[in-house]
Image (cartoon, rainbow, N blue to C red; front, side, top):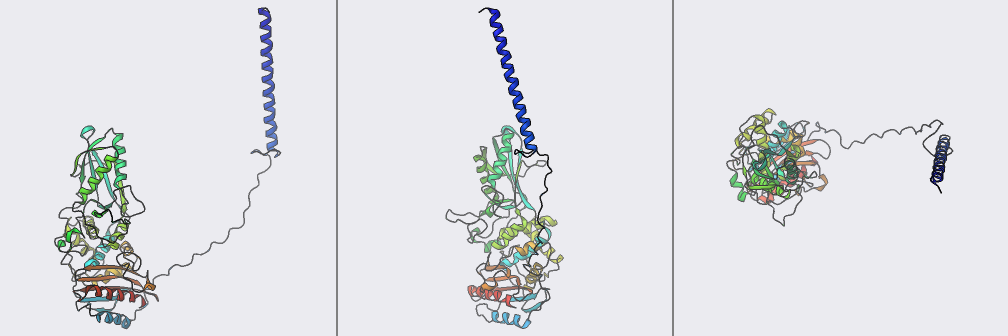
Length: 482
């Protein structure tokens, strides 16, 4: 075949291909148009339609059900049978284990004393002193605020210095931040991870670590606390930071971080220990830490590159009261002193507490505060002061956080096992106190037949401490029946 013939054949093939393409396109277009028409006319399924959309109809709404009353308003006017109240006190006094060095007061919801025994005598209060500190602190501090622990970078490259600065969170966790607990809400592992990420963004993989422990000035220990703090078991220095309050648990002491009953030894260097833990967490994140962490304040003018937040002060106060944590009670006093412009010292803390109680109208006659927790030797107060503090708990006000943090006998806190009548569980909120020659309790009661009352009892030098404690349990449990 010649070249001309081959060309004619190619032309015929090309025309045939173009014709097939044209026919296919036309068929496709017709199918699309046909389906669209079918869709719009509802012959075929699809989203297109010519008919009106039917508006859905709904049944008439049901009436909202009114919530039932879980609890009524507190009846502040229901009188207390003064004779019955005095009989409870007389029964308590008749217990030979109590001895003669004791005071009791029972007051109604308005604070009026209905029965008492030596209400103006000065007594050593033990940990019921914490209720004074809690009321004063909660009345001034923002109880919804948190304590920040952050990291600050000074310098760059091989000369970079990282500062770990705390603002008083002594319940840091050694691991990741734990939103389900107060103790460990802010975790050093989380802070280290976030800090390492910020360092690596700046091309820094090696730092010198300093820690800033300057939020509380020296001295950190109240003057007479050593006598009741053998082996550093019940108090350690208030600090800008600590892991688990400085508690040094052994491997066999497993516990819920918010719920424990034993007293492990406390670290005497809680801030330094927290910095060492943080250094370990940084290393786990690929950051080299040269040398050991050392104490030094953060220079002025720097902002944090990472930070974690504690639980709220209200949550920390509840933890403090229910565990009767002496260090945290002292810290609340120090935070109050700082907030009110008092001296940053143990004396400044007790001064700040007394000043606030005076402002609240609480009687401070006979009040001597050797510290803010009641652990130090030398503290004295009257049950009148104690019961007036408790009476403030049943009033609406800014100090509600201290009332909510009290132990609930039969349910939670240091008074969990102190209730002798389980039928009144949940009706009392109390703070316990215990030293070698002291057993005490103060709180408020929802009375079974309606109404409220407040009470306080202190026993010094009982003839039998254990039995006197049981006598307080019986007295306290009987108050709900008044």
